[in-house]
Structures are given as structure tokens and as C-alpha cells.
Amino acid sequence: MGGGGNQIVTGTGFWSMGGYARYVWPCFAFAGMILGWNLWSARRYRVAAQLRARRALEAAETDRAAPTVVTIPRTAGGKA
Amino acid sequence: MSVGPCEAFALVVRRELRLSFRRPDQLLQPLVFFLIVTTLFPLGLSLQLSLLRDMAPGVLWVAALLSSLLSLDSLFKSDADDGTLEQLALCGQGLTVIVVAKTFAHWLVTGLALVLVSPVVGTALGIPGSVFATMMLSLGLGTLTLSWLGAIGAGLTVGLKRGNVLLSLIVLPLAMPLLIFGAGATDRAISGVSAAGALYFLAALCVFTCTLAPFAATAALHITLE
Amino acid sequence: MWTWFYKLASPPYVYGTAAALAPWFLGLAAIAIGYGVVDGLVFAPPDYQQGDAFRIIYVHVPSAWLSLFAYVSMAVAAAIALIWRIKMGHAVAAASAPIGASFTLLALATGSLWGRPMWGTFWAWDPRLTSELILLFLYVGVMSLRSAFEDPARGDRAAALLALVGVVNVPIIHFSVVWWNSLHQGATVAKFGKPTMAASMLWPLLSMALGFMLFYGAVLCMRLQGEVLNRERQAKWVAEAIKS
Image 1 (cartoon, rainbow over the protein chains, first blue to last red):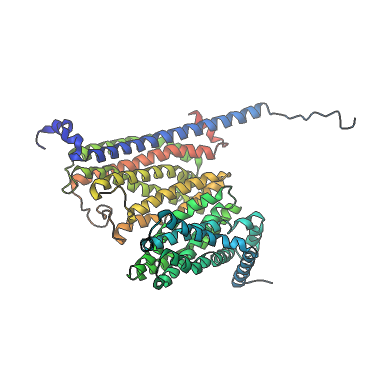
Image 2 (image 1 turned 90 degrees about the vertical axis):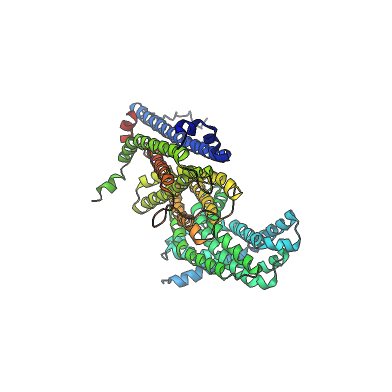
């Protein structure tokens, strides 16, 4: 690797990828996007599930503490 | 009085055929769709007959695929809706025999009908008469395989609200290898090369599917009908 | 002997294990992918025929392998769920599907971008590309079927059956380059015998592949936690697990 490590990375040779830059770099960019999307989506899914579970538990607790009793009012009657 | 599986099969097939012929318009709809779709391609592409011939096997097969899909919805749906399917499942013969009989009857009235109509369509698309035997054989094997793939899809989607679209979404990817080899067989016959290889592969696909699909379709119905 | 197997069936165990493993998988994946990218982009020598364009291999092949691996995992989990009626199998299958689908998309996209300079076309209807596309459709079909049912348990079972029916496609994809005359390159690594790729090019590829698998493990664990919670919302252990 003549010329030292620096030249490989910072020289125009690296970024142009031997002329194939417009194929190589979008591929890696797309890969990064897919990896990022997977992380973001999985995290979002987990958080939403935890939220839903928390809400369900709270609803069950309030129900247990003060159960909703439905009273059906007796109507004055159909008979006039 | 106990009925053996073969008699049960024959009874169910006879019932299906009788029900189908009671409504001849429903029987003709997939066929008419087949004819219409095959007409769309030449109209849309306005090709000369000689050029159309190159596309003909593909067009034929896509049309056969789509019209088969249309009729698949009715495979289990009406019986599931009025509870007949559950009764059949409980009758002691095992659901598999029923499924095999229903699918076979379905193929008789749709797939076989397509095969018999295909020479007419083939002529309209410019397929030479010498190729008709290969074409009809490939279509016959292909539609049988397709009926079975469709039975799996129909079993999975019976009772779903917009099951029709989902059925196509499920069945079409599974049917793609079929399309490749089916159209390939006719294509090869048209260009004069031996279509034997493609036909053997089609037959293998057909045997594979006909052997395993009944169990998959029955399992699907058990899942969706419980 | 089977206690470990039945432990896997216990939702709190699965949830806890997934929570514990995810950061480890992610850390190791970052290392493997980091090394793979640097070594593959900077230090691997350019290919004799393809020049620097061959470096697309470092994202294309790992994502293609992962697309198959994720589908097989999904199918195995589905089989376990259907045969032994272990609901956690459905959770794993449901978690795998979107991950596998995204990597199938990546494989198709990177393959397409690689095909343009190499074969002159963005797409060709050749057996491997076509069967990989079918794999994407199968993923979408499984996910759509699962969500179409009002009863989630029924949706899980139907999707599991469909995943198993579609698993036939996986060997077709892998062997398509052997069975048919294909435009796509034949097997150079995943075959019997020594790989025919130069070592300096091979190591970053293996590292990227390992990194992607570990990444799949990490994201699977994260999604799995969500899937387990959705299926076990009312269970007693959930209260403790959420508070932590």
C-alpha cells in the first residue's frame, strides 16, 4: 500500500471507487438506511407494546379498586 | 351405513358438479374473463399476428392464471357461509377427502374448461395448430397445480372480509414457477425445440403439489373454521 | 433434557432473555459490521474484473443471506408453534417477518445497482433474481395474512401455515444458479469445498455476514419483546417486567 494510509482514505481515489461511485455509495447508504429503519421500527414497536400493556394494567387496577357498577334505572313504566 | 372414502369422494364431486351446473352463468364467467383478458393484450399492444405469436404463450398463461384466481373464491366460501363445510368436516370422512373432492370438481369446471377453450384463444393469438397438444397439456397440468395452490389460499382466507385480494397476493407468488415453466413449454414448442423438459418439470410440480397441498389446505381450513 | 426447550415456551423467560441479549447482539454486530465496512472498503484489493464495484458484495451478499436466514427462522418458529402449540413460536415468526422483508428489499436494491455496471441492466428475469423477488412477495403475503384476521391467534396460525408453504422457495433461490443457466454468479462461498474467493476479500465479507446475523438477532430480540407483550398483556408477570 504505497503512499501511506492517509492517501488511501482522503485521496479522490477512495471516494470515486474506481469510477463506480454512483453505484457503490448508494448501496452502502441504502444498507445504512435499512439498518437504521430496523432499529427505529423495532424500538418503536417495543415502546408501543409496553405502553399498551401499561395502560391495560392500569385499567385492570382501577377496575379492581372501584368496579364500575351499572345500574339500570327503573322507568316509571310503560303503563301510563 | 358407512361410506368409504372413494364413495365419499365421488359423492362430493357429483354434488359440486350439480351445484355448479345449476348456475351456468357463474360457470361461464371465468371462461369469458379468460377470453376478454387474452383480447386485451393484442388490443393494447396492437402487434401483428407474427409478433403476437412470440408473446402468445405468456399471454395465455397470465390470462389462465387470473381467471383461475377469480373462480377460487367460490371454492369454500359458499359452503363455509351456510355451515355446510363444518357439517362436511364432521361427517366422519375427514376433511381431506372433502377438500380433494371439492378441488378436483373445481378444476373440472374451471381448469379443464380453460384447457378445452384454449385452442380457440391460441388461434386468436397466432399459436400454430401443431403446438396445440403441448399447449393443452401444459395448461392442463398447470391449472391442476393452480387449483391446488388456490385451495391452500382459499382455505387460509375463507371468511375474511376482503379475502379476494389477499388470496391473489398469496397464490400468485407461489404460482410464479408454474408460469415460468408452463409458458416456457409452449414457447419451446413454438420455436421448434423439444418441450419435453419443461413438460416433465410441470408434471413434477403438479405431482408435488397434488400430493402435499391437500394436507396444507385441510390444515388451513382447520385453522380458519375453528 | 427438554427443559431448555420448554423454558423457551415460557413468555416471561423469552421476554427477559430477549431484553438481556439485545444490547449484546447489537454491540457485537456493530463491531463486526464496523470492521467489515472498513476492511472491505479500504483495505481489500480491487477485483481483477470488476474493479471497485465488487465492494457492493459487502452489503449485497450479507443481506441476501439474511433474507433467506430470516425466512427459514420464521418457518422453523412457525413449525414449532403449529406442531407443539408453543405460542412463543408465533411471536418469533411475527417478529422475523418485517426484518426479513426489509433485507430482501436491500438485497434486491443493491443487486440491481450492482447489475447496472456489471451486466448493463438494472434487472433481469433470471432464476435467482426472480425467486428472490418471489421471496419478498411471500414475506408481504405472510404479514398481510397475519394482520387480516380479527382474532390474532387465528391470524398467527394462518400466517404460520403460509410461511411453511412458502419455504419451498428458499432452496430454489439457493440452487437456482446451479440448476439453471443464470446470469447471476454461481456459488463461491456457500458451497462444499474451499471458497474460491481471495482471503483478503473473504474476511470482510464473512465479518459483514456475521455482523448482519448478529444485527438480526438484536432487532429480533427487540421486536420479540413487543410481540410477547402484545400476546400476553393480561398476564401477571407483565406488571413486574414493565416496571423494570
